[in-house]
Amino acid sequence: MINRTIQSRYSAVLIMSAVLFLLLSVGCQQEEANITVIKSPGGKKQLCKDERMEWWRQARFGMFIHWGLYAVPAGEWKGEKVPGIGEWIMERAKIPVSEYEQLAGQFNPVKFDAEQWVQIAKNAGMKYIVITSKHHDGFCLWDTKYTDYDVVDATPFKRDILGELVAECKKQGIRLCFYHSIMDWHHPDAQAPFYPNYNDTSKSNPNFDRYVEYYLKGQLKELVQNYGPLGIMWFDGEWVKDWTREMGWDMYDYCLSLQPDTIVNNRVGNGRQGMRGLSKSDEFAGDYGTPEQEIPATGLPGVDWETCMTMNDTWGYKSYDNNWKSTEDLLHKLVDIASKGGNFLLNVGPTAEGLIPAASVERLAAIGEWMKHNSESIYGTTASPLGEVPWGRCTAKPGKLYLHVFDWPTNGKLEVTGIKNKVKKAYLLADKKKAKMLFERQSNEKIVLTVPSRAADPVDTVIVLEIENK
Image (cartoon, rainbow, N blue to C red; front, side, top):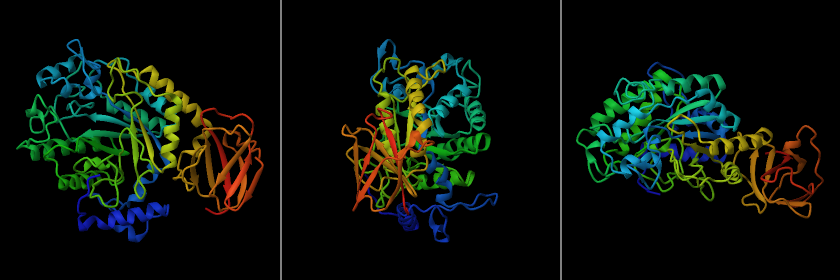
């Protein structure tokens, strides 16, 4: 973590945020006036952070989509495999802007089907989608008036991808959110003069302020007005030299002035913060932390957070990256994250044809089958009050504990310690309609359940404990 002196105007934000989170408050008290209360220029209702975050805390599971021109080379340049993540190929292969631009003429994803993409996410049990409106390479997936370097003006495809996804997400009840890069390797007022090292954080661009005020803010306003309301404005690329903490706070306020109920991630702030989480000692802009490719050992107590992760080793598509995580591993990660109070943003990297790779689709479908029977133990849950348990994980709701048993006991007995409340019922979540009671013995803070000899689900069988009080 990078610790800095917290500005006095935001000290109340951090303190009250932590208190509310720990008490699992769902209300919006008058004292919360210091927690990011925004009034739109049109005089719309003021919103506190808890009101804006309510749907996100319920969702717990979302789809990340990294898609752009980098899907065309798919990890190779001039016959050579380029190491590293696919969406960084422009920087990693040191491709001049003029050469990289030519990929737009080859980007023609005729197999793109917005309905299919959204259905894949929905069937997996995902509640929101975050797609790259613009990544670091500067290419835009919508018909923007600020540049012709977009999918409608520069490619043979000439369809507004974001527009089609907006319509389909509304139809299927999925929240659409946009990833938007602060860094831009294509725009001359941003990073473009730094070729061949586009990620040179030691250099400044004298026109960066102009880029922010005209181009960056202009495009954000365009996205909200033309495609909103948006669930999240998901920033990245905040480590560039010219991006200051003051710019981060200003951009945060600007986003909420455009749409008072949107959520903004913490990468709108300046600088990398360890796992990009938030702690009470950090100065930050944004509503939640964003650990990348890892799950904090104990979560991030006191703040909202979301782990973003790839299914293989890349975000953007690479044709030869077949290092896929197993379905069991991904499902256990989802449960682990929920048990620590976080959200899971799981990535797919579509091909240049517009297809989500088959390996991703297969894993998401398998997760979806589990979610059909067990989603109650994920949606709207909070962190486990039991701490570490030897047999798996635990998630919680008022009056209920969900025991996620990864390692099914061979002796037919499951011991659970740390429960002070009286247990009223115990049953398998997947067998909820029958609600067959599991025999329970409770003494002090320990209960013993007599469970079936075989796990109902070999990956994760969920047992529900209904308890008195919270």
